[in-house]
Length: 69
Image 1 (cartoon, one colour):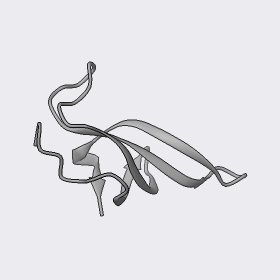
Image 2 (cartoon, rainbow, N blue to C red):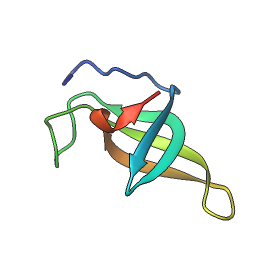
Image 3 (cartoon, rainbow, N blue to C red):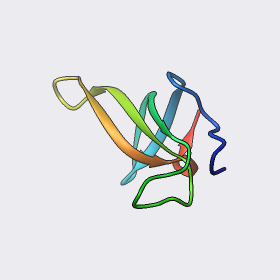
């Protein structure tokens, strides 16, 4: 819900993009959405073990409706 984030910093969450599931930790919370979409809370999520070299990757502006625990 806008202005009332469901998840907190460092919460471990999962989300799916293009039929691929990712697991990471909440890194940044945008409680009032972003300039592109202010209809829902969004999060930046740091994903560990991303890619072949298992590096970190920050996924930005993930809508709350795409996230689950």
